[in-house]
Image (cartoon, rainbow, N blue to C red; front, side, top):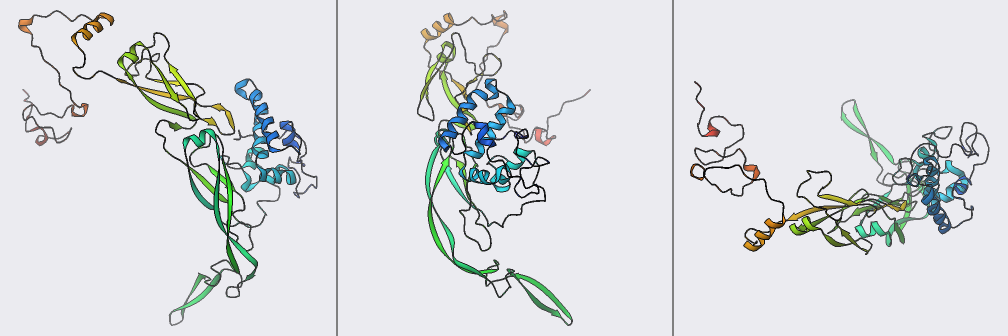
Length: 415
């Protein structure tokens, strides 16, 4: 994840105007060591060494730990590039400028923009070879996989060009042909159509299926619809580089946990006794750990959120999902409490008496004369029925704001 801005502006190796050279006009060789210097590793270090160096720096340099935010941006950006073999190879050859275009990390709109504040190479846009279409595959993953990380081996097949493609004579390599259609005397319509001989590619070639097994690395903290890209692994196309294969993650529902960003939520039913006297229950986490959630002394869980100090939703810090790229950072675990009250008639007379003794006494009612007062009992009702009963007919109104017909013809007389 990049934090925006220009984290490497203060580093050397740039051409006049701040652009590292790669044929952009100055002739100065690109700087291909600055990212390694940020992490404090040798350019020949393996991925494991780079990973350890990043985690070691992140633990002490993260802004939450009192580190400098600008310095942490550089550490995070360097890790995003050097952890990826393809990006690292291009950086080692061309420097930061070689990471332009399709080499941005997932979740950032453009790695070039993220590192250089949106500046582009002098001389215009992308001058590289054409690229074939990408192929997308959905990949269903469990919440456990996204929490713990996982490497899956998946077999894919692609079209491989055999031999050298030749230009299509039917369309002269254009992929389109033009036909004339007579509409009437002196009236001709010109129609452009795809060439059927070469299927619009402009080339004739032979192809065969090639099967490959890809190792799909699901990082800790990845989310639904995140993409895992394999560059140049799509079908061969003539006169162009192969496109990419993208696996698009589809997070499966979980029976216990609900996820939103880096937070997790569970629902827990409490008895009235637990709500009043304290609770303690285990939770089996996504990595198999068992944690015990326990109330504090004197804590009461109420069936509403009327008090900021006694909410029915509580959270446990650092027990949510790990953050992608920084798995030692985690979100929160939210617990939504639902209080299960005793069923009707389940309390004995002795239990009621004991409750009256233990619980605070209610507010005394106002005195009344039994001979002049009627005692009534309330029935259960749906709140949606409020305002829908016609006392004269016993029927529900047709609508809340109907006219005389909807109210059974009853009107208030005005004097």
